[in-house]
Image 1 (cartoon, helix red, strand yellow):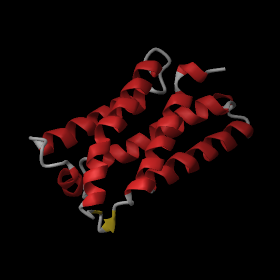
Image 2 (cartoon, rainbow, N blue to C red):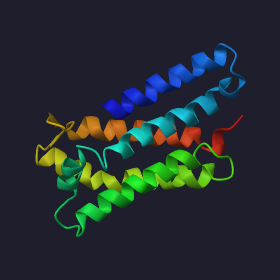
Image 3 (cartoon, rainbow, N blue to C red):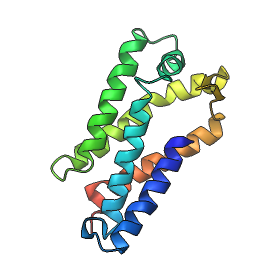
Length: 149
């Protein structure tokens, strides 16, 4: 839920900053790109923080080298967060971030079915998690250059 809150709150903050006169954020697209970046920097931080062990446990048993997977996906999230804000890389970053969410969804399914926790809190139930994934993917697509005004 924290990534969703970060996405919405940072988008609103950037829009307010834009409306107050900071021209960089004077349109919804740039504000959404920055909000997507904030969201992915937040989620990436869990790949090395106190929630790392929880993320490693979420990787389904069929996948080897779970620690490596968590590290690589965290690095890819950071790269995507930076890339989505850079015009030359924005489309590639949007595609990459979308693929990351799709690729990591089996871990969400596994965690929901096994009733796991992250940071001591239960993972969201699968229907809610699927809805969040769709919202995140929609935000990424809208933040891509395909929707630049």
